[in-house]
Picture (cartoon, rainbow, N blue to C red):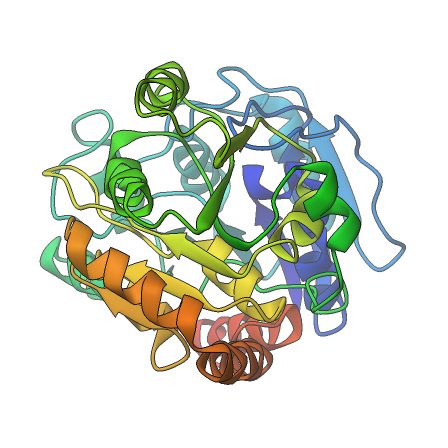
Length: 367
């Protein structure tokens, strides 16, 4: 089977382990932007790939804008004609311009897209999403809610529920991080948050919860528009000795920071236009043997299942209690650490995700 995969996701080299896993099962050609702005991680501008697949890094317009960015039309068409794929897989939302380009250029080929969108609403330019959906032969949804949204939009073709990315479990694995903890001044019981510093991630819930847990430390890794306001809040509540913020770091360094934690919290909070679509940092922490606590926003309970702790989103008291229980119970933390790693190995490795993708491609192709 020949597959052409188009996505901005693989601008980050750390994500290309999935491409390696796919290339073990199909003849793979991948197209990525030559640059991508990201608020969390530094993304090197490189087109290096393994020998297992062919990678094309193209200059784009509107990098960092998932719906608006697009590739040079002539270059993209030439790659498709050269690769002669049986199936084109676009890991972008169905309202994206990149998706439209592939829908226009696909000719007789099968076309599959990926979606995280888990709220029924119109996004992008009017009519664009409808055009793309009409030209697609199947879809992969990152969660059960995302699949339900697609059906509500009238998409009647096959849908598989598969996370977009798995993990390299040789990179994300338990490891000692004593020196990093010491260098960051994070002694005692360390709570962590990794992600965007935005309102919908529930950071005020987390900050309010740790305020009344004096024997804890909080390590925040990420960047975003709330940073200055959070820093003022920390100073105003005299928590500068207990809360540390680390700005954007290379994604490859995330395992070190995760292993410096005693527990990771993802306190996401649903808004009228957003709810948690997956929470990839959850499986990263679980793979590292770090117990996780997540709000019941969107797909978080689906991701964690019984391998972590769920609390009602926005409930400061419930989150505080969940942290306190784990802080006091080392045996429970060990149990969750083992359960989390086991869940990742069973469901979220790059090999497992790639195999599920290929099974769905075969279904769409009628193989």
